[in-house]
Image (cartoon, rainbow, N blue to C red; front, side, top):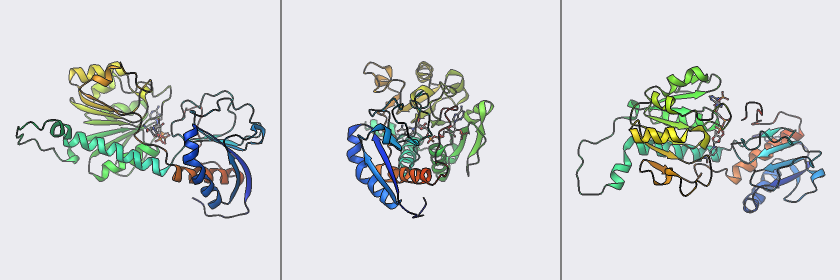
Length: 319
Ligand SMILES: NC(=O)c1ccc[n+]([C@@H]2O[C@H](COP(=O)([O-])OP(=O)(O)OC[C@H]3O[C@@H](n4cnc5c(N)ncnc54)[C@H](OP(=O)(O)O)[C@@H]3O)[C@@H](O)[C@H]2O)c1
């Protein structure tokens, strides 16, 4: 983050997210703007023709950007931008959220669930039944292969946390990547090796046409029998029917799912009642107002200085 304190710029910043978020973000945004020397008029109801930047979540009131005639950029509060990339009224740069507070939460969530599976915690937590199960200690982490699909801001941080615990970590991305300690694979041709004999897979891919149902009957079959799935990415990354079939056949032992094709997950969805599925309500990692406000301020500072924005979305790639 820059500490460059040139002359303060005057900009109009519209906050367009769900009303409860305004209470959370108003003070941190003001503080971050002051620190970045940005003289901002910040509000939830500015005349559209005056707005320079929109701090944006799709859950807010704006979906048509046409009236914002002098808009310079849309700064997403969300890491996943699949509902924004196809907006035909959006003709200015779109930046997604990369927030180290959010990243830390995701690392904790993914590492926690991988350790839960590795150590077989459920067996002991749910079975306090008087049976002394001797000889059921877990192998070492180094003897478990964990595959992280997606090696971006979140996937690479999660992969590195698992490397520190000495898991045999493989990762997969669209373009070639180097992440310390991680065996990296890329492209369609790399998926099979990334998943081959994996004991666990964590999905941290964006939702794009190219990633839809990346975990399907065929790709699940590459994993070691009795494997585990952790999905904090997006629901459409998984073919739900294939996942259920693999759980029922024993190809997979259990899945923890934080995201779904339809959210909230409908009450009658088979995931809720399935004994081998843990449903969490899209809580793996939230953007944190304090750290995210600093990212937004830095991007406005860059925009005003004519510098390239951080975390610019490639709208053709969809993320
Ligand atoms: N559940 C939650 O609470 C929560 C919170 C935040 C985010 N999320 C989800 O997490 C996702 C990842 O976030 P991020 O910040 O890590 O995104 P990111 O930095 O954009 O990283 C995306 C990664 O996926 C890879 N990828 C994209 N398309 C691919 C393809 N067709 N084949 C192989 N790899 C592909 C990218 O490859 P390259 O490196 O080659 O570009 C990159 O490594 C978000 O899109 C969002 O859906 C969920």
